[in-house]
Every structure is written in structure tokens, then in C-alpha cells.
Image 1 (cartoon, rainbow, N blue to C red):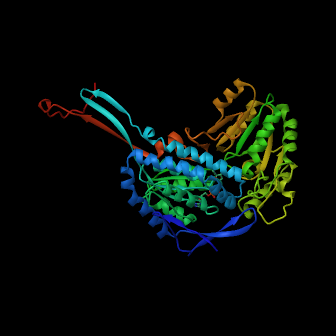
Image 2: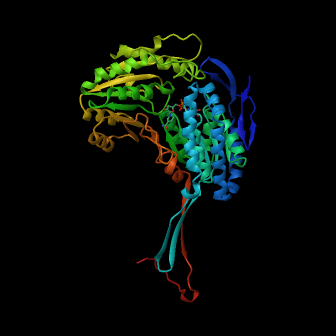
Image 3: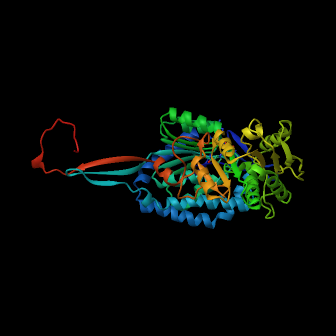
Length: 494
Ligand code: NAD
């Protein structure tokens, strides 16, 4: 069985003492194993990152930017190869895998502007003959821990900005689809990144805990499910680290009575079932306001039958399998349990038959879902769309604001005033107006509210520069020695 190893100090390494399986979700076959890091492996990666730090932070900004310009070129050139890796381990269709690479590329493009991003501030004459300026310096070694669902984009959310800001990184990708991170690390190396600046360790909780407990790691970026995000936030901050831990989601899409039903249904189907619902910004709750509900449910239902579900390498496929057999079965259990809880199962995707052992499930639509039902409360993370019917705009906002998650939300309406009011009062970090998956472009930052993010900083974009740097403020005077005198008073600028 082929082994996926670590990438430490520019070299692939790793003893197969502990390993885990990596499946091809479209066939259900175990295609290779991944090495799970020991404490010593992770410590070796952290030591490599620590050793590479002084030279990397001393590298001129222009030379650092050069790496990102070259990386951008390489990533574009090698997109088909990388997309094939993503599809073979994650299952999403090739076009979707290429889409995630393109969104990750935005973070590389943002990082290539680092000469501008790292500008400090300067104030002349804050007191007589005294100037002040600030500089942004790297925090040190950064731990980056990523989920299975975006094996290229989410690592790039973190490592592009962290490295641009002069830090060195230990990346721990998901053990379910680890190969894309190794490919990325080698691409960074080809782009001229010195060895040790980006290290990849594969593994499980042991690897993560070693990162969280290491005194040599200054900051931790995490993206994954809410329970793990919360525990990572606690453990890393207890250890005195800077932490941002992005968690799960339950994203609502409100459809107002004045919305174009066909456009709303197209958007809902695309955002609910794209990538088999395994996106943190997937729409999982459709909030039908007033008398729009019956027509909307019918418009969504009518679009579901023609969706092509199959192997992601087949260009006809629009949706691939789920990540594991266990996850597929868990997703299916929400659909089979929904009727018992009182929901109407309009389309039951669990009934769909597939002629191979891949981790496939069909698309499901549940209607008359209420807030007490498990299908509403949990993040299902699969191709299941729940419709909640409400009487008014106010009830829609109250529903969303009472939800414990606050990652993404969308409103479909033709009324600018309603959209503006929604933006003003909805308690969610990312809002779409007639845009179902409002993932901000790379020049802005990404982050949810409430249980969708633990910590202060959103990820990538301008907030990442803040997260991955420490500000130093320097006060300067060039006095005339002849005016010098002893003065025990506290310096005042008035
Ligand atoms: P996960 O929480 O199971 O795993 C994420 C990472 O944490 C992996 O690297 C995993 O190895 C590690 N991990 C798992 N259990 C751990 C433990 N007990 N201790 C320490 N580390 C542990 O998440 P996943 O299933 O890989 O990804 C799906 C989840 O990620 C969904 O909840 C999704 O909403 C969320 N997600 C959120 C965002 C966002 O931006 N908010 C983006 C993508 C995914």
C-alpha cells in the first residue's frame, strides 16, 4: 500500500508505525495509507520551522513576494493535476475541485501584495522633536490545522498570509484527504520557498495536541467542526497562544414573497447540493416567507430529479459521493429520522440506488421542518435541504438570530429596503443579497459569528495580516545633547 508521508524541512519523511486509510470515496476502495505523526515527528517539524524563522523573516519583502508570484503561476499551470488529487480523495467533481483551487489562488494573489500589506504607520512631531512609527513583525511559528472539505483552499487561507507575513508554518491537514497539502508544499518549494518555512505533518489528535502544547508555536489557525474548534481554542489559548478557530455552520437562505422563484430555486439547489452539501457555506435551511412556500418547494423539487450524481472524474457528474461510508450513513439517518419527527420528506435521497460501493447518497428535501427537529439543529453536512416556513420577514430574522451558528446567510428579494434592513440586523458573519454562498473575495476576510468562530480574527484577507503579525510601536527623538537634562516627571505631550 502506497504511503502518504510528512514533508519536513523540504523532505518527504515518516515511519509507518501508525497509519490510517485514505479512500477513493467514489469507489469505496482504500487507495493508500497516510502516516500518523508521532510526538517526535511533530516536534521535528516544529524545530524545522523554528530554525527557518530567522532567515525567512529577514528575507526582503520583494523576495518573499517573488515566491507568491511564482506560486500563482505554478498553481494555475498544475490545476488539473491538483484537482485530480482532490477528486480522488475527497470525491467532489473535478470542476468543483478546480473551483476551490481558483478560490485558494485568491489568497496567493493577496499574499503577493505583501509589500503593501505590511506597511506600518508613522506620525511626525507627536511631541516636540518626537516621532512615532509602527511596524508589523511575524509572530513566529504558526500551527495550521485544516478540515477535509477544502483540502486546497483552506490550507491556502492560512499558509499564504502566514508565510507572507514572515512566519514559518506547521500544517496538519485532514487525515481523510492529505495528499493535496503535500502537493502544495512541494509547489511552494518549487516556487522558491526555503526548506523549513512550510512543513506538513499528517495525523490525528496526537499531532494536533503536540502543536497546541508546544511552547515553540506562537499562533494556531484552525478550521473544522464546532466541538473541535472550541476545544482547540481553549487548549491553545490556555497555552498562551494566539488562536482563531473556525467551526461549523447552519446556513439559512431566506426567500421573500417578492423574490423571483425560479432564480431562488436555482440558487438553493446549487448551494445545497453542490459538493454534496459538504461546504461550510452550503445552504442547509431554506426559509420560505409567507405564501412563497408551496411554489418554492415545488420549484426546488422539480430541479432535483435531473441532478447527475456520480464519480467526480466523470465530466457528466454534478455531485460526487460523501467523504466516508460512516458519514454517508449519518447523513442518511437524518433523512430517515425526519419523518418520525414530523417533517414532510418531499424527496428521499436515501432511496436512490447506486451500482457501486462508493459513498453515495441521493439529494433530499425536507419540508415543514421546525426548530425542535434534529435535522434543523445539527449541521448535517450532506445533500439535505430543510424548508422552514415562517409568516413574516421578522420571524425569519428571529429564527436565524436564535440559531447557535452564524457563518453565512442569504436573502433573496427584489426589495432594496428589505435587503438593507436584513444586512443591518442579522447576526451572521457573512451575508449574501441574492447570492447564496457569500464567501468573501480574497481582499476581504472570511469568518462567522457565534459558534462558527472562536477567537477575534477572521481568516485570510486583511484580518489575517493582523492575526499573523505583532505590532511594534517605536518612539524616536534625536535630541540636541546641549538641551539634555534630568527630569523625573512622567513624559507629557501637552
Ligand atoms: P473536524 O473537526 O473533524 O476535523 C478538522 C481537523 O481537526 C482535522 O485536521 C482533524 O484531523 C482534526 N481533529 C479531529 N478531531 C480532533 C480532536 N479530537 N482533537 C484534535 N484535532 C482533531 O472537521 P472535518 O470533518 O474535517 O470538516 C468538516 C467541518 O469543518 C464542518 O463542521 C464544517 O462546517 C467545518 N468547516 C468550517 C469552515 C469555516 O470556515 N467555518 C470551513 C470548512 C469547514
